Image (cartoon, rainbow, N blue to C red; front, side, top):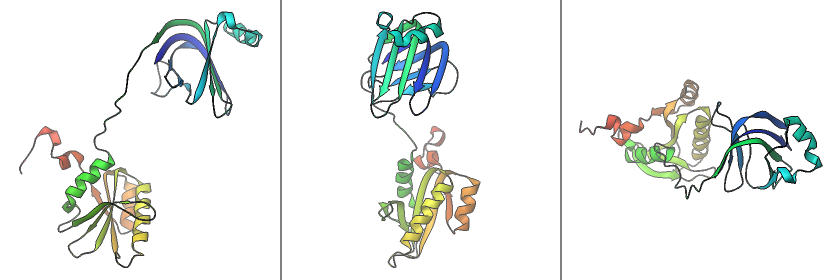
Length: 240
């Protein structure tokens, strides 16, 4: 990772045109040649960037040609460095002009092991499958990732009367999740060996709009407390 702190300008051309006026910024150049420009304030997103795959070209002061005459006049003096990133699959170009470089360092970050996530939909699915009676007394698990022609249902179960239950699990339940469950239930109900199939919409949070739509379609809404399901809420294990 190359990290440059500098007074710089930037111009992006191609499918869109965008310009950053002269200011002090942080420019990150990753090992895959991606270029990202950040300011001190604002969100985590870069002000401008060129994503891989792209090629990089560095132009120093003594390499400037007449094509940069107007550019150097705009910033008042010849820049210390110009980095030109060109996309390989389009005509997009990001050109960063460094008028004064404060710091220029390259650091080997090594191999990134990746982000370890806790509480994702897969974890909720595993826990609910193990604790399937949260859906109702006498409910039994058939299988997780129950296959259908339009994708797998998160959990398929049966109640104590032998009626099938299709369960769709989300971390944050919105209308899109209800629509997804609707498609599954409609398809499954075409199979006489499965019908009638009841839908359960399970999530850590469910928006009021999603709850209204789900209940209007005859589905049951089930709120999932991930910490409580793990038995680690507030860090204490309880027998009762």
